[in-house]
Length: 288
Image (cartoon, rainbow, N blue to C red; front, top):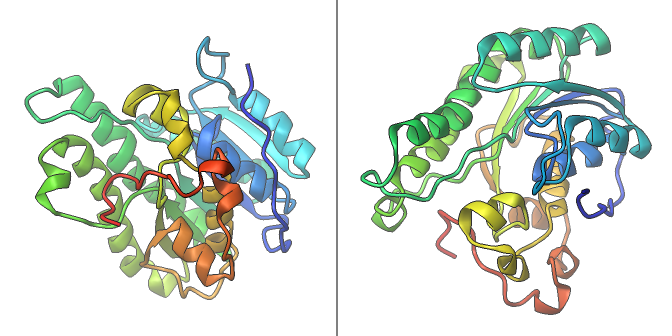
């Protein structure tokens, strides 16, 4: 079982030879970002749990490694649980040893459960906090020494702009807390690291993105008709990561907005079904 092929847009070569450490990169948005950066000739560390094929979910760290190398990058596939400090630390050590350092960390791994406080079991609550907000702390804490040695250090986390309206908090406060926690940590890191030249930002999709999370955790595969393809997030992430002057640090970015700033005016082909590009659903935490 494999995911849909990804059609890559033109790259600039800005990430050639840079080492990109991506959590949860065995499928979905993480895979798309990996392949986009690989097309620049980047070194991609595929840090995810999926080492064995799943009956319902396509992709493993090894299948993505093959795709990365086919796209023009160098790959290091590492089975990593972002909740476990020792595993993350060892993965970063191995990445730096193989590629000579780490330039970028992309916090893409995520856990989602859209339930209220009453309906969320403690184990599920702990999972979301650990895989989402705590992992941003942990990867940053462990990566900062490597990133300080880079000429273009970046930390990019896939989390939403802060939006504390009750309509977003009441239905699923545990998940909202975990995702906003990622953003708050990123805002703090941007300030903490500004003198070190490390850029820290967040990225969130304007619309639903056709991933396993939408199919199995949010709704069903029919919702793909209201979604865009993961490549839009990959293109947006690429624009952020190739920006090396620090001007995006501290920003809470939306894929459509950063691409618009970089000259993209037609988003039709990003739709999972371009014929329904005018019927897309706005993603969680965004009001318009």
